[in-house]
View 1: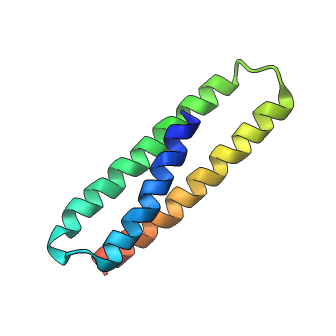
View 2: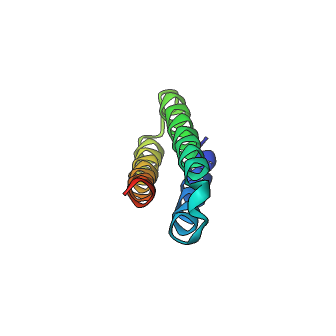
Length: 88
């Protein structure tokens, strides 16, 4: 689940490039893709959080929680930038 969230964040970053350079006629498609990538990242994060409840290693839990929080921050930043770029 963590890798799913990380992968979604990476692709969302690439989608920002597409938003800046791509065909304006495809902007609605890109907005849908961005929404799906956000959902994938958030779903992965939810899975990570649920799985962390059963982990006894406090250091591992703290590290994984910090990593998923950073990924979600990145997703939010890229998602907002894409939306702003495409919707003016």
